[in-house]
Length: 161
Image 1 (cartoon, rainbow, N blue to C red):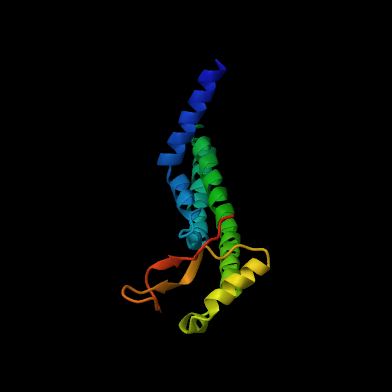
Image 2 (image 1 turned 60 degrees about the vertical axis):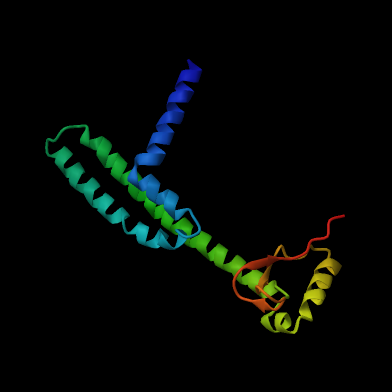
């Protein structure tokens, strides 16, 4: 019996996650590219609240009682969108801050790459500080020569013990 209930709840969850519009929207907002759409998605909470008010008035004026379920659904969706909009702003700020720290802490600058003298110094500094070298270096290598150019990223050498 417990297995049947568990299976039913899993299938219901999967169905709601795939086919309900607000859940699909929230899944899209949770991605890195979708974080910027969190605040505009908060504006979608307004039509849900308006629909909840209209349906509540219709229920109170003698409408069918099952409209209360749709009122609850509208309120629930508006709460989800409002909360996710706020959370996406915090997550976006955290991603931007992490990106800023990564850019500021990279010891390979454009001038050092052009001079080619910064490579050894950068790797030596990271090893001396107890860290590992960067896994992906900002500079890249051209097709015919070993001069850095923009395009494909080159992986930094990693020394395995």
